[in-house]
Length: 396
Ligand code: NI
Image (cartoon, rainbow, N blue to C red; front, side, top):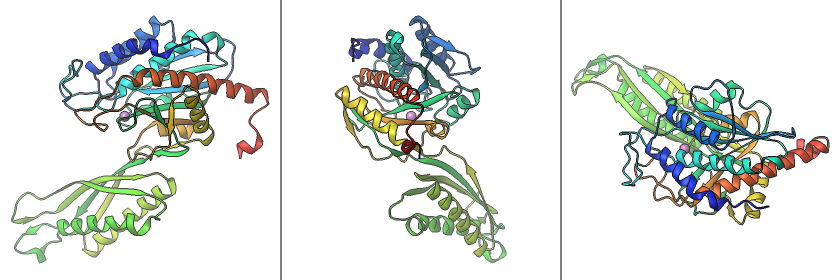
């Protein structure tokens, strides 16, 4: 590594992160955030590339001598949560908060862009920065892919802050690191009656209760001990009064899986259980799915490269447990190879908590890590293209 010192931009990145933290914007509404990112990039002389996005920014550094294209992604949206941190730079917008640390991601990846801009001459290709909107709704990654922002990209890199890992520690693993996150809504249709005369109706509440109980057997009886899945029913609604059996009961929940085969199997079983139990009670039921992102599945070779890069910088690399949360970075990894890492931020609370915070000491760690990873990745891809493509053994 040559002369750059990521630590020297820690203060600048902290100022950026705090500005973003004070002005959170929800998914698809990141207009001021977008304008601020454009202003910071422009001030650093970094080129913005127009992909026709309403919110979100695509920028590029390098490519002066041709070469491969890689992408580094930061998500920029906040959550509908009332902040309770008491920080001096707490959210100025009631009911909205950067409670998932996307302000941190944005600042750290801006820092990466600044550091790479200083070394633009030596880059063996192009680094495309994806400042992605609407991650919390799992919509932004698809939007960016549709806009063409991933065209030509040979490897994509991203991160999530991780409150339970210390500063200077990076969680890297090959294979699944975050879950496929699907939602479901079940409507049970019976026949209403007087509560005192249940035989005149078809009780959707009793049916729903049996279905919900039976759903819990799917994970324990249909999923192998070596795989994993979660089914949680999170909302249940039926009825209007204590003396009326209603016509309908509706409940919904979520399904989390790490493997596509398990995901499909559980979804099929869920529909079978719903329809089977409903039919046993002479009611009708219907399942609607809320399609979430698939699991985030890292490529082995980029996970290996990320670990080598992190270790060369003196950071500690750990193999993290996969998170059952969902992350729309998964859609990029369906398009191209890459790696998504967990960056230690030593926070007091988990994601989406009203007192969520992080240690800003992680900002220069993240910026220097992604800077070095981009440089290493471009040089790896350039070497491979000089050798005439990847080795046969790597391809299969
Ligand atoms: Ni997040």
